[in-house]
Length: 318
Image (cartoon, rainbow, N blue to C red):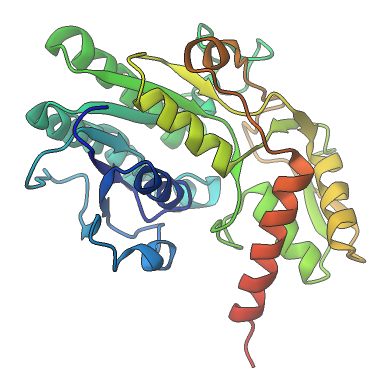
């Protein structure tokens, strides 16, 4: 292990807050940087009294400095759901470009290992299935999802340039469809939307005919893969996601069964450039990192359901 202190950009977001917890559990102190555009201080409120955790409100599109030694820089800052990056398209592009540059500069100045949180979205609407890291993708550069897809693809190119031309110890992780506690009920992604609708008795709105697939991975498994990559010397890119593939229609029906809801499935128009299939080839993660997901979809959805049920009760007006 390098110096046991890490910077996590986007650390108050859904995935970032879980990563902060995992690093602290490994004995790594954490400096969390976030501008709270899509993250929330509620996600890290239980960490703020710890001596080994520090939160700094920072916009990554501006140069950042962190006093003291740093062994790792994890760059997660970005809008991550379609609803968010369609609401903040320019900010998403900026944090994926200038924000990545500033995070790389920080890692270089500290002599830290840099980990870029990239995404399965770099594969676009894939023509190869499942998707190995060697696949270049099928991305519409001017489509509505391009602000996120191309921001992450640029981030990967910039990270690779720092590694090859400047010798920075840098790695890329491509994250597939994570879910779990702390997702916002209005996040816009399938699982929080379906859970909120099922728990409130609304129809579950499935886009298209529901045959499009995703491979969903519980956040605890995702974070375990990210940490494993950081503590290795592998440069990536490495896919981290579940090889278990499920259609959106089947996912909606499973959530109705788990919640015991009287809700029904209702089909609505499918968004432009919505991928038809999505499943990672995880052979590299298994071989290089000894990683594979452990949490079944039923177990993961039950723990997520419990959190959402409590969250909706808290949010419901008296």
